[in-house]
Image (cartoon, helix red, strand yellow):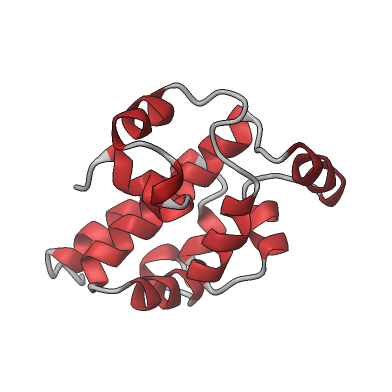
Length: 143
């Protein structure tokens, strides 16, 4: 498993946050922890539209407009985005590349009742199911 700082690197420009600060920022998600720009950058990595990522983390269009003006996500929104980031990072490790991870996350999966893994990341239970599926793939358990 990668360090906490690498999850933040997935979501944010690593140059914008000092390394010692990253671990603390992951623990203490407060206002102005995760910048609005993370949504666009991370949605590009996932190969989806920013609006789809916002829906996944439970941010309506109207709320998104406010967050864009403020420049940062609220702590609960940032936490949900970080949850998606952790799964993306895990999938990248399992599949060896971010583009392969994004493809796997966006395609229906038989381990997950033929729904896309990405669609399940809106809840803790769904996230655990996706993580378990990645574990089975990593260890070659296909039955």
